[in-house]
Image (cartoon, rainbow, N blue to C red; front, side, top):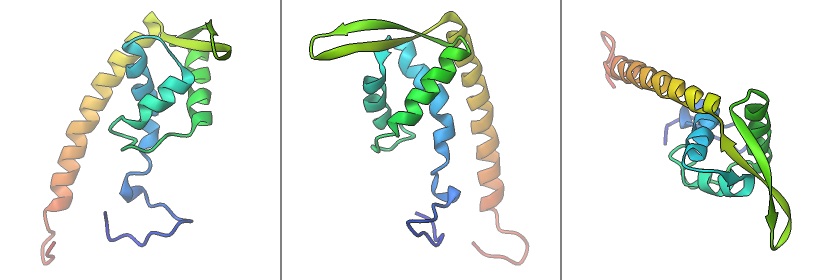
Length: 130
């Protein structure tokens, strides 16, 4: 944890709470492993490195799935359920697989750039001590 003054009303980005922007590539990666319904994705996202055991907002995940479908990266089919109403089962399209490959390149570049930034920020400026 950082020394940032944290209150329930204020969550500092320095604590890593803005990593939800990486939800798209994470959902796409999960779907690359096979089709899944929304609730299963929400449960699996909880165990992803970005969520650190915290369950994501289901509404946001469903909204993202709708956006990905509008972009042609995800499609869905209805599947019968023994325990209730039919469920939407989502899967990655070929365009989605290409987008995910692009994400891999983008995230790799981010990782290198972030490593450089961390190195620069970890080096004390003249006259400062860390």
